[in-house]
Every structure is written in C-alpha cells, then in structure tokens.
Image 1 (tube, rainbow over the protein chains, first blue to last red):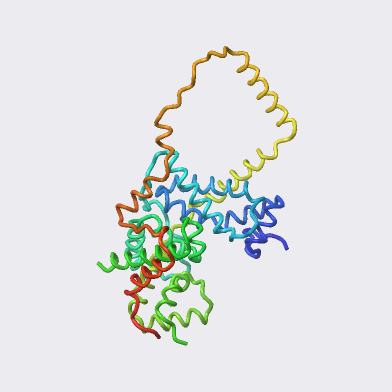
Image 2: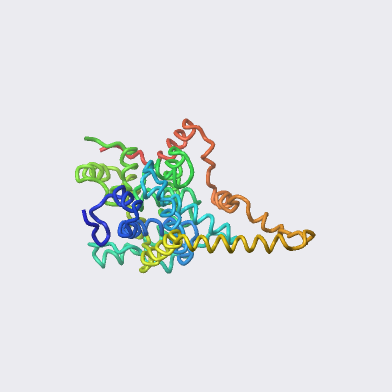
Length: 185
Length: 157
C-alpha cells in the first residue's frame, strides 16, 4: 500500500515498521500524526510555546534514533509522549528553569463544524477551564490532559507520568474534582 | 442498559473527544440526561477538549528537517569515520606530549548542585497540595477514588 500525504490509511504499527526500514515518508507521517499531542505534553510541562517546540523536535529526534529498538510493547504514541515528557523535564533542568504559564500565544485546534456564534459564547468559559487546568499540580494536570485531549488509558497515562495505573486514575479524578470546584465558583 | 456513574465518568473523556462508537455514545448520553453531576463533569471536559492547543504551523516541517539531518549524520560514509579517528588520534598525541604536571581542572560546584532530581516538581506539588500517590497500595488508592467519586453519585440511568 502506498503512503498518502499523511499516511492516513496506515496504522501506527505499520508506519513504525516502515520507518524502521528507513522509509522517510513513514517517518513524516508519524510526525504529522503525533505532533499535536507531543506539543501539548511539552507545553504543559515547560509552559513556553517556543521552548515546547524545541522539546518536540528533540523528542522526535530521540524517538527516531531509538526506533530500531522499539518492539511495540507500548503504543508508539505512548512511547513518544513518554520521551517528550522526559525531554521537557530534562530541558527545564538543564536551563535551571521552572515551568512558565503562557498559553496566550497558542491557538486552539480548529473545531470543525462548530457554529461561530456558539464558539464565541463558549470561548471565554473554555479559556477559563484551560487556565484552571494550568493551575493543577503536574501529575494531575497531565493525567487530565492525556485522558481528555489524547484519549489515553490510565495504564498509558501511568507510563507517561511515571506512576502506576491506579495512581494515574486517582490523579485524574482528583484533578477533575478540583477543576469542577473551581469552575463552579 | 443502565450505566452507573462510575462507568460514565470513565467514558466521558472519550465521549467529548468523539472517540466512542455510536451505541456507546448513546448509552453515556442517556446517562447524562438523567444525572446532573455527570452532566456538569461532561460540560467541563467538553470545554477543555474544544480549547486544546494545537502544534504551531511549521512545526512538522521543522521536526522532519531535524530528523533528516540527524539520520544523515548517523549515516556518514566510512571516510568520515576514518577522518574522525585520525582527528582523535592527533588530539591524543597532543595531550600525551604535554607536561604531566598540568593543572587540575576544577569543576564548578554549582554544576553538581544543578544536577539534582526535579526538585521543582515536588515544590509544585506541595504548593498546590498534590497528594503523594506513588507509594500507596491499591487498596488505599481505591479508598481515595471512592472519596473523589462522592461528587458523581447522582444516580444511574
């Protein structure tokens, strides 16, 4: 099967297999498919959009260097997001920086099919919800984000944030509980 | 079939993310119609999902370029490696021919201080009141979950 512009028809496992054989198109398709998720994880950890882009670039380079040893025990996306989270923490440590909080310069993903009027009405509330998410402690924030934005299972979230499946679940529900409290104020 | 709050709350993220099949989505939506607490949770999660940030334009191109360069450098021809080996050898001879009483190199202490574990993460958690969960048993985690689930017991549908 031929790879389309973004490899839409192929599964991650197939793209990874082809990438392991040196197929540049498959590599490109994996980048296209997972750049949003990687960027969100990086941004959540470093807080700065420019720095988050550096982290994403570093993470993909590291992931593709190690692709030969990737056996598919975890989903490619979970593996990549774990590498991204580690790269983000490493970047902050290296620079002796703390996470910043500046989502103003980041545009939300375009929500197709949403009425522009409705979008304007919910826009303020959505921005508020996102700002509240920013205030959660790191593991709760990442657990909520990875479950809601990326649809990861609690087991996969545990792999990314470095905890057990049970702890990931508690972090998620604790985060949601606090978000609801804050949003209802 | 009735859906319990516990089940609904686990699946709400997939509902708002459009990741459920038609029948699964119908089951959860029917539950939300009769459960105010779960509906409120779904509203918050929907707001989060619709405002999720996307990668800036041009990032994919930049990443692909970096990956391409990195793979290119990993595939240097044999004469490239040979040249590198000669350079290392020359450097080694140069170092060996220097006085053996050369001054010791001092490593600044702040480097060691900066290499510690992610102290700020702990700090972040402490400021925001994050619980330390990693050392807890499954039983203790379940008890915590029960406690957190108290806001979503609006009934079954």
